[in-house]
Image (cartoon, rainbow, N blue to C red; front, top):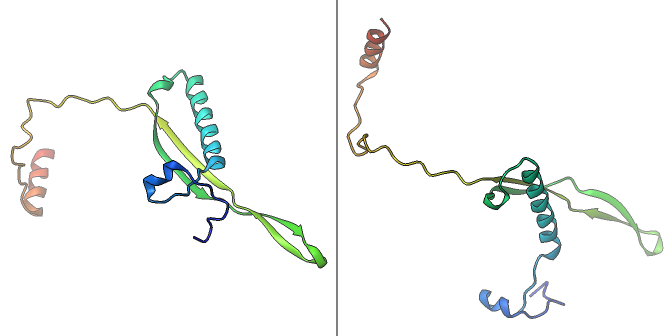
Length: 127
């Protein structure tokens, strides 16, 4: 209720149980520009751009930019920006490798024993 002044109604907001909704147009513009840049970089490296997937994406705070805004009656207020660091990693999907049918996956694993027995086995192997 606090920040809903000037927010218009949207039919898609019904999916979230409300009538008012808006979209992060400015933020998405930055991300789209970064994705286009990453696609161009992949094209320059002669990678197939149709197969690329976003493997990792993170947004972290950057130091605030400090400026001044001059107000009435000789006052000065801070005028700060809130920049961020956006890190995106694109990668081609990993190919599925067929499992080896010769190895029994459900077979019980060999129990080595205690430390003394393992050390003795190592001495026998290395000798």
